[in-house]
Image (cartoon, rainbow, N blue to C red; front, side, top):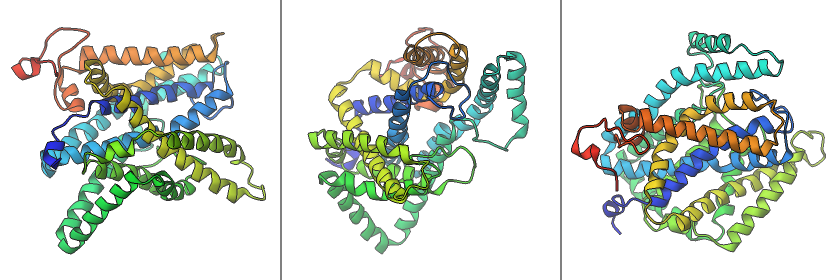
Length: 414
């Protein structure tokens, strides 16, 4: 299949993958108040469980990596559809604009949530004062720009996207280098996607990046505007891998092929990672460095196998076009952007209720998703904000009040 034809095909199951990666982030943040030990989160619930620690570790090991791989895949597609200049303009609309607007609107609400959480654990919450304090925090701009928020992923997505385009342009300037690197990259990605040892191979450089992180596992780079090098290299690697996968329509299918070997590898690496994670703080252990190396390698294998399996499962379950899946995919970016302050406030509200942690976790997550979708359909989907997030305005589905006027915009996407 030629490249131009490939780029005109919509892979519907990837809508499900993207939705899953982003919505899983809602459940991830919703679970942090139920950790069995206090981790510095806004609030700690009276009902906790060690199972939450397992969920958090596994969730955090592959969710954003999956997102960056898909970002690279779709970026390559859009780049060749639109051209370099139009592609950069679209990145400005879909990354920079949501980052700027999201920071000014969401950060005060998130900061107020953290303040309320700390006060709630002391038994004294002043909602109005905490909200005002949240908005007062805007006065410290640009200090602690990313701290306490989840918008760092847009910052890194922008840096990585621009870096890939710049590197690509520099390579193309020097023809001998271009003529040697492009076939080499194509051959390497083709070999990896067809090799049964692919996950072991890509896990090695991934584990090397993990080695230099502050904690065992994947760091959250929300402390500074200076890019964290290990984090940048790891997410950049997944982005580049997705970019290269889009060069050949068959590669993604091979990468995401479901096999018993891959499933067994995923389970074993998950168990090994969970066992070895208990040694993170035991610095005096005789074999500490060997245990750390074993953890990093098993964590990297778990990461890559979960990314591959998730894509493969979505391909098997959502291969047919679905208007529901497409709607959720369109809404998922908004859901992830808006979810954190809602999650924090619901966690604070539920923290002292005498209910099982699982009931609270599911309730917080589903209520957050419901509120986000209602807001999306009522105020975002058919507006200029929806156009910035989804590429164009789309008709409402829950609130069928038509606000767009052009014939093209009135037609529901098939």
